[in-house]
Image 1: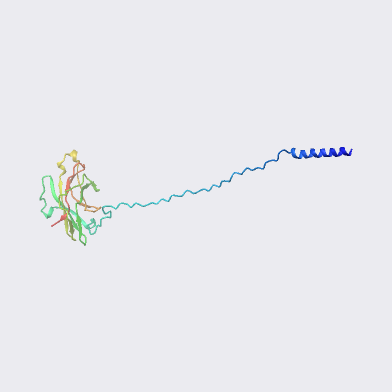
Image 2: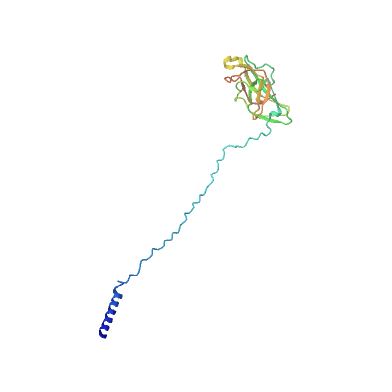
Length: 218
């Protein structure tokens, strides 16, 4: 009996040993997977372009843009005007049948000398309110145009040829009697009024006057 017990115990030990070596199967292999590397992205800033702006200078005018200094130029505040004969000639000399050859005469009423140079702006006006009648005088640019100095009390003259409105057909002229003549001295934006009852064309189709530049008066 003791022998059978020993054999049984031995057999039980073998069975237990086999269970330990085969019951769990092959040992599990170690996990050798390498984890994916962590990618660190470093943002590189795009360089900012720096624009260099070069200012282009404006072109220099070829002529002076500064206003011309008036200096001692005569102004209407120191002038009076009249229609008279050229060069102090007797009244009526030089008149044609339908034309008068006279002069615009300006007198310096100031206390100092002043100058004029060039052609005056001249037009006939009427309606009792200075309305321009017809076309302004044209310039006779063939006449001398020096700078003239007018002493206090002295005079200058601008020759003017006036054609009678009656030489034109009524449909071309639409005649009306003017109150007088408006005169702008050269370089002036203000005018003088000279009373003169000349006939005017209210139409601008014809200019009745041609004026020359100012020259000295005897």
